[in-house]
Image 1 (cartoon, rainbow, N blue to C red):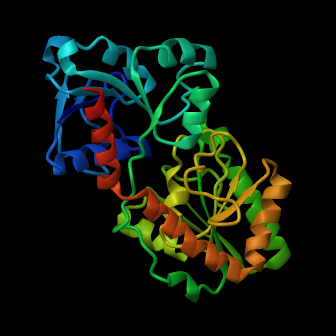
Image 2 (image 1 turned 90 degrees about the horizontal axis):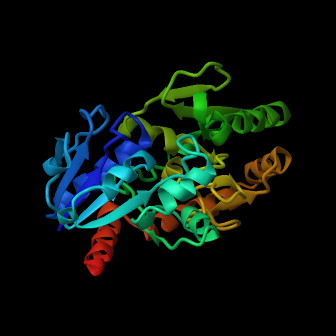
Length: 330
């Protein structure tokens, strides 16, 4: 199958969304498909090598023919819609509710009402589109199950380690790292033997954490997640939230929040792979404390957490689903 990922007006940079697309494209190519990344400028992503052909497009005539062309972000949708018919099925892989690009009313008119096949990467986004009477197909990217796996390193921890994602800037109110810090400070004051480990894309403005990893490579992530006893997921506007699932791949349970776009509905089951708290800081801290106090429950949830992510599957399994779905539309 010939597949185009349309990055025009979106681009590739050093962030998780670009990494996911690159790994999806590379996986499809390894499976024997012909994959193109078309773009408005050069590839600025340096974390992973893009193995597919990257083509800078100046005119629609420059776009290769394909079986399907997939918009990868809100700003690429109009470009995808305008692509020649020889580019095949026109789809949009919706991976977030991008209110930083458009307000909700424009998301409906510019994105949801655009004549594209709607793919979403999570159950939360599927429900979000359903609320506006738009159908969608869930296509997840899959996980690197052989890169992140349990090593039992945390059994040697001298302190209880809380893990979380640090974010600053325009997405800070969405990711809510302050909740993680407040929960840590509460636990530290009450119990003493608590550490906070975080990672992020930038150096933090404040340094309350005991250990911080800036842009960790795969080996550093493996070490990081395997030492964390409990992962805190506080985001309120995600597609498929990656870090909590990666923590679960090392048998680390998660405390998340009960919001529509937590990004964790696909793998976080309350009382099974972690705890889903009410969307208030007081209840969130109670849930953190509960798992701190119950080691056996934590370990049991952690084992089931890894199994749940394995059930969702690796990248090849999920890219097969993408190909199967698109093939059925041709």
